[in-house]
Length: 110
Length: 113
Image: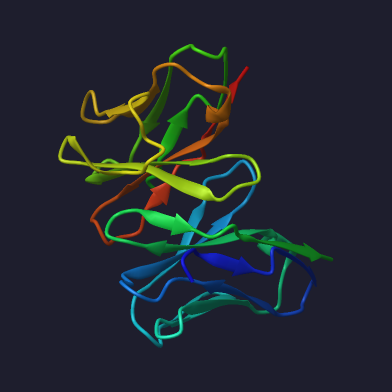
């Protein structure tokens, strides 16, 4: 994998359901993996910075895991709410810059 | 809570004109960045800035682009002679350390006609 890839591109979730989606990244020369939550017309909001293989981070109903050996991270949303509707971006951190995936757009319907 | 701000939120300009996009990073941060997102594409890195000089730049960041920190609070991106393909959302970000979280502003949507 040469680029950061996210799947699926979009998903629709019923309120109350849980969901997860994937970020794949080049596993060589890994420094860190960042997750952002981005609502239209707002600043991308930093969710997690993940650095160690096996890392698991949690913020409320959102959590993320990291596997640096195989080059992927999962983001989980438990009990989705309409306010979770956003685009979730992952980015691999090189020495300084962030290399972003295309994002997963999540739409939570009541 | 401290936040990164950007002005203007939208800018429309004619091809060949110069534009300056402005950012006020979080006050105690030391590292500053510009990214952009062309509609339908990924967010892509343009340039990073530390200690009053460019620390890294992408191949996109050619001689038409420049950055400056003219005072203790502002961080600007100048495009000297805009092209149609410069139309994008431009994001400023800042961080307290090289490996710390980058905090993003809300972006400036630039449209070049």
